[in-house]
Image (tube, rainbow over all chains, first blue to last red; front, side, top):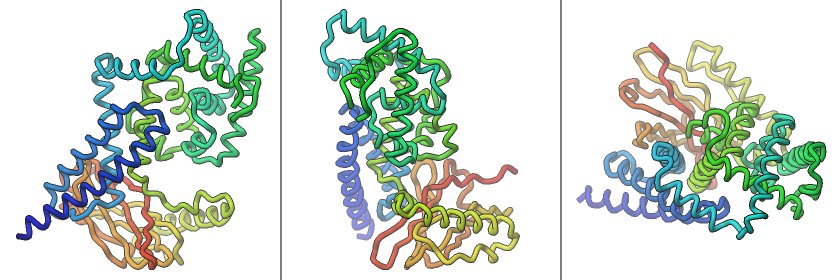
Length: 188
Length: 210
């Protein structure tokens, strides 16, 4: 029966694209340090969207790259929106637990000293050029110059140069604030 | 990265954690995060957005989620050659040609008199031409070596409005097909002689206000 044949081909197409998508998502997610729960939620969301659309629209006989792209981006946007709507509930607890698990154990004194330095760093960041500040923030948040370049559409060399100059500005401000020592090394 | 940089990063991380979501300025809409990942909009606006996102731990994690999703879906890219610094001048020349072509297309009132281009390695779409009571006229630049073009128009739910393969570089989508649908986007995939494909970036199809 034609209907059965179509259903089977849709199932195969769906399974194939989901296997590929979830495989790449795990790799990319690990690079971005995303919690496993996030990756599971995203995969499931994309699965539901593809399944719903494929089983209800007979004109779609295969999953094209742009189709998958659309499904994945709207899935991510909806997850973000849902999280914001339920902010302060269980999801935040999960995220905090993940963060705590990733952090190296700190003594209370060291923890307090880091937080205090962090506040001064933030203060110093406010006084550096607005065009350099975002890339310095990104670098300090743990991203490499390759990632910064990719996100902004720059070459790695340009990203590295901006980070280098921004960090130099930051160190100058910190010294002016009487803080010597942190961040006087080289980038990556 | 030096140990001093590591200490700076640890301090910054501690500061982010302490502040949580209590960051100055409003949090960007999820669509703005996607625009940042897709690099759409001016660099100044994206940098401003990035400044907030990287100062707000929650927004940063949301950005990572969107980035991962887009990366895993395999963002349709205009062409990988565009990123190669070794042929930056060629890319610049091609961009100027596309801009000139788009201007010609927009300036012309006759849809048949669209830009006459020799073709490039990517697929660049023209602005949509809306014809009252008829529909949307889609057009794109010819791609060198393309055997066929697959045009896909999808709505917000991901349902296909149009999925058509052709040799032409224009397509008229009837207004009746677009009625009562939201979040419509369209893209073109060129299939080359060797079987490889090049896809344009998905573009929003927004009907003009009546």
